[in-house]
Length: 216
Ligand SMILES: C[S@@+](CC[C@H](N)C(=O)[O-])C[C@H]1O[C@@H](n2cnc3c(N)ncnc32)[C@H](O)[C@@H]1O
Image (tube, rainbow, N blue to C red; front, top):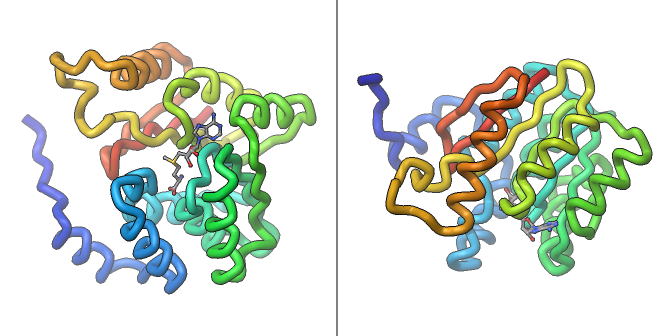
């Protein structure tokens, strides 16, 4: 079998201490989310945030669309890596979390790079398609029920050489648990099978809860 080491908390600390330090506001937001209790799991992992930052810098990405803002950790991480003229459009239907996210964007002085929209994801994405908007990176991290729709619609919004990244596609390992037959696990499995059939370049990065990385 393939060899993979166990990435535990200590290893993450080691990785972080040998790469880029987190921005103080990223640290503050992680702490804020931890204090929220069980919903803290909604935030992407630190290594996932770092990967988004790496990709943005490496590919000189300037425009991002995000579905699923929550309290703003992924948007904040992406914004910190974007160039001065870079922009993120992030969508979420939760007004109270949006207020929190905005306060952290202001603290980190990246608020000018981030446009937040409070809306249902499908309605918002359809509006962007109508306006013929294009993005270099589309990050899908909202309701899992609509993942296939979000992905198919995102294809219409993607710039040439752009990326679509989707979170939670290993679903805490449940995708391979034959006993798991709940609605959301089935949705994620169906989504992964949908991507498998789609003619697009694809790679699964097993960090956090699993990133599907797709590019044209
Ligand atoms: C996993 S969280 C996003 C986490 C965020 N990317 C981060 O790293 O902090 C998912 C978000 O999707 C939002 N959401 C759920 N259903 C939605 C819908 N139909 N339209 C828009 N947003 C939705 C939730 O309010 C929640 O904030």
